[in-house]
Amino acid sequence: MASPSHRRSLRKRRTVLVSAAAVTAAGLGAAVFVMNANAGAVDLYHQTLAAKDGWASSGTGTTGGAKADSAHTFTVSTRAQLVKALGSASDTTPRIIKIKGTIDANTNDAGKKLTCSDYASGTGYSLTSYLKAYDPSTYGTSKLPSGTQETARAAAQTKQAKNIAFKVPANTSIVGVPGTNAGITGGMLQIQNVDNVIVRNLAFSATEDCFPQWDPTDGDDGNWNSNYDSVTLRGATHVWADHNTFTDAPHLDSANPKYYGREYQIHDGALDITKSSDLVTVSRNQFTNHDKTMLIGSSDSEPSGKLRVSIHHNIWKGIGQRAPLARVGQIHIYNNYYDVTTLNGYAPQYSINSRAKAQVVAANNYWKVPSTAKVAKLLSGDGTGSIAGSGNLVNGTVTDLVAAYNAASSKDLKTTVNWTPTLTAGLESSAKSLPTSLATTTGAGVLS
Ligand code: CA
Ligand code: CA
Image (cartoon, rainbow, N blue to C red; front, side):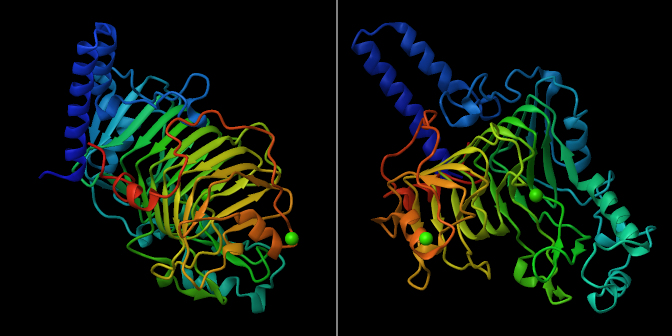
């Protein structure tokens, strides 16, 4: 099939040939020609983050498993194969893992589908008993659940976590094989306390917690909280997440029931970057059909000097909030396309939140905003975070989002930051064409 990506790839090759010919004709020496030819020959699995492409290019850069030998190059199609290929989380040998097709994290080693009941089996947990035990009318609202049913819930959750959380070691590239609908459904890639990881061309879907925990002290009315992000970075450095798609589908939040009057939320983040993670580039992904999409920093007291993240050329469409929610770090958000039209029941609350003294530069992004939405609601903050940057468009018109937000809020965003982005390869000075150009150049499935 002559897919658009295939055509693009052909076009790219022709461009290399033409420029090589032009170089030769101009008598500019063979060295340039050889360099160009080699650059074109690097396959998808060995590609590394380009120089100056965001914070992950800082210092040693992000090469993932590019140096893997053949013994550490794997093609996997099942959960068990993926677990084996990942090996030990402390083994730093470079490795390339090619994911072919969609891996269902909720399967056992023999490939049999596992359900929530399978994880609950033997723990004594049942939702009916749990709801009875911690009903606010009898249990109250002042303390977290504890006792038999909470212990059973935690045990069942641990069983699921062991099955669906995939710990990624340092110096690893995990890349979807083009043309195979490559991805992980129901799982969480856990990139924790490791350096140098690349995640590309993967569709992440249906990351669901079978055992949400009730917290009556969370917010005014309590909340049901879940444990898993599709990709979670905790204390991770040099991570490049590129050309992936994130979605809750097929079970959307609109299908969540309510217990104790609160949504029984089975989803957590799509891509969360927490616990002093640092030097991360998030490029050309699609985030869709999700509520709490990207957390940068999980607490206002995360130490300063980390959480440096570049977020560029992504599509955010049909997401509720946290695109991202930024704390503490120096964060560059540019050339993204935000479509804040309500989609499948996901009603946008805000796009970017800057709090806990976050130093956000948001520039040259494009917001598509329906006539019913307020521009003042595109941002959020706690009065200590900054958002600088210009060239942001709302429906094609240059708009000062911070001024609009500050005019309507008592917790003003600060408008100056303590840094100037320099790792900005590929930055486009105009956001005008992003709605069109990003439609065919983002998400899983367009790379070849
Ligand atoms: Ca999370
Ligand atoms: Ca104000």
